[in-house]
Length: 431
Image (cartoon, rainbow, N blue to C red; front, side, top):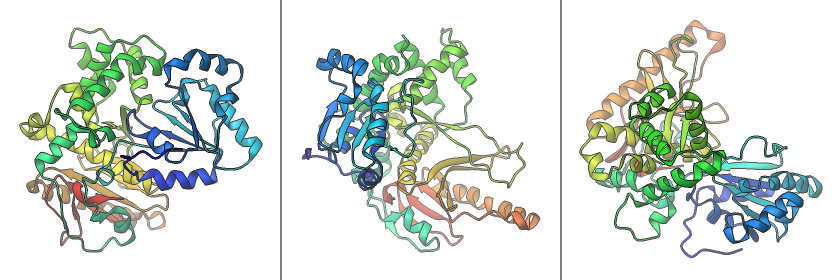
């Protein structure tokens, strides 16, 4: 349809092209301003944009009478922000069934639709891809010297690279975020993109996502609390108590209206737990870890900048962990894998795990500063005897060992330690 001069190629480009050939449609979902529409436009031959306010009245009439009209245009046809008129989903499913071929439609959405607004799931007809804000590999912040796919394929290889990013650059990037606009436009304040995203979320997006008149200030308060508890296993009741400590009267029922809305908007997410049989079921904590899709919004919620992170190393570590989760999540998606985490009551943990469809997996710890690398490596190596003990005790139910262990750092060199643990700066990683 059109080629944008300053388009930043995405890791998802090839995946989307391949899926579109196989399925009648592809749904690209993810947070606002992460580049979904621009990416879809590289493949689309025609488009309709539901965010166009000047056409809202006509769109409403079409949705009520003949939503199939939304699908007219040269194929593949882009339907941008489809969830605004969810009737188009069922119309697309019907069209795909009739034509029985691929390369028909691309749907994009910055939030999940309200429950009950679509009839069909779209299973086997509409493939789904979740996009994030730009990874370091996509924004060229990473030199891409260390490939996760390569480590899975050859987990005993030696690596060697030097990150192009220092500590200050990482702090700036945590605040700046991975919004494509941050890499194509001028700005004076790196927090400006996160602040604008936060304002939109609180003042209009969450109301649209839930269909409820939710308070912008309460939205901000909840996000501040989540930001204070970033990269932790905080329970929702703790968030509610934290918000109510500031002269609010937030009930659990009302909290979940906000919480569901923020999840639908791809603002916050729960990283599920990895539960191998190396501990008793009561020992492994099944709580999900609370993360932001992009730490820039967490920084905006707290009103902090790069200097604040530099002056508070402990908090910076949690924000860096969130950044690593975003990066590893993007790369896991491209590998067809899933991002999880492990934490038990003995305080053994892996900040993140990547699980591939064929059963291979890797464990990761995220550490700021070279002096904490040893702690991260020791924690990861502590898993091995537990696997070995289980496999000796249950020879017919053996668990595979992790393909590799890696400590992700904020700066420095990439290398393989003598104990086999990889040390990889986030500025060297790619899929």
